[in-house]
Image (cartoon, rainbow, N blue to C red; front, side, top):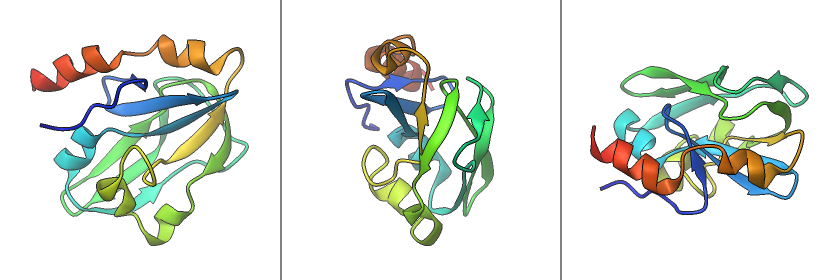
Length: 130
């Protein structure tokens, strides 16, 4: 069974979001990295780019496939995890920690934006139905 971490917001596309003050950190879920297999490349947007919720924000490539990454929130990219350029396997090893992908600044309260996404319980039920 894949880990679903409490306190995060999730999407149907298997991204997670974590409120960190006015910033939201985004990555892919443990379920997603398990389904993809060994991650070999992560393409993310440039710092300063404005993202729209549920729109593509990059791609993630594994030995099996290339998949689109979708932003769970609207906002401006303020940081990308450049370590993934040299060590994309961090997404497999620690998807909720060192394998995060980008950070986005949102309008309004980040915690409220994350709370509007799927809860860990809802996401876990969704994954269990797969």
